[in-house]
Each structure stands twice: as structure tokens, then as C-alpha cells.
Image (tube, rainbow, N blue to C red; front, side, top):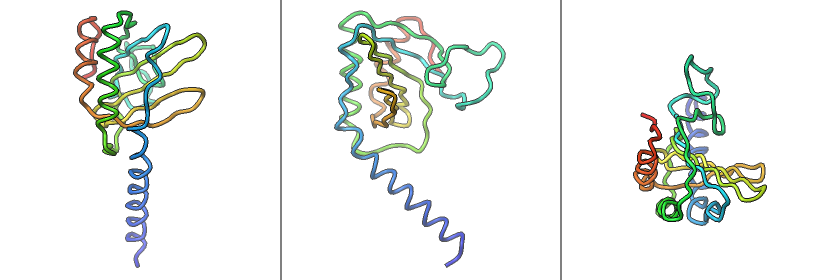
Length: 162
């Protein structure tokens, strides 16, 4: 067996293992972010590779390393409910599908007392990072919540990533 064939086999095995590990991540997760004192929705520029130097005039604020295009506190219960239902439906709707990319364009920060839960969301890649208690957990979603998130951000005059 050639070295190239062995390398290819290991890459394929690694990809299969990654997909199998991630299949169980989505459906069981229920975001504990909605019973909060403050919920902030972020518009992120996931098109800028993580760790890239900031371009002149680029946004200074970052959310887990991603440039923030804008953010808004979601203070109305009905708006929180729409976002929650959309996100929970996306999580429940994912049956183990995930893309190999991560280009987040949305984020949520939930504050309850001294507890912070952050979601960095890539609807295109069908995954999100949940930052909580000093750890990061990968959770799967679908792209279905994105129009709900985009509509709210647009209604609040927050720019969206291209």
C-alpha cells in the first residue's frame, strides 16, 4: 500500500469519525439562553478568516474572534420567542448533517446574573459553537432559522454579512 493511499485512508476515517461524533450533538441540546436578563443578537462577518489582521476601517469589536458588524439587545418577549422557536426548530431538524466549513454570520450572548452563554452560529455550515462555563461545545442546526434572524437584524437596521 502506498503512502498516499494510507494518508487518504486516514483522512477518510477521520472525516467519518468526526461526522459520527457530531451526529449526537444537535438534537439533544436545548439552548439555556432564553431565561436571561439580557439577550443580544450579533451580526458577524464570518468571511474574514479567524486571526486575520484587521484591515483599516474594519470593525474593532470581535465576538469570539469574529468581527462584529452590529448588535442589538432583544428586549421584547415576542421577538425572543420567534428567535428561540426558529433556533430550536433548526437544532431539532438537523439529523447529523454538517459542512466542513465554519463561516459564522450570527451570534447570541445571553446574560443571567454572572452566567454568560454565547452562541457563534453558522447557518450555512449547519453548526454553532456554544461557549459556556469556560468550554466550547459544537451543536448542529439547519439553515432554516437564518431568515428569522436576518429579518430581525434588518428590522433593527443592523447590517448583514455578504
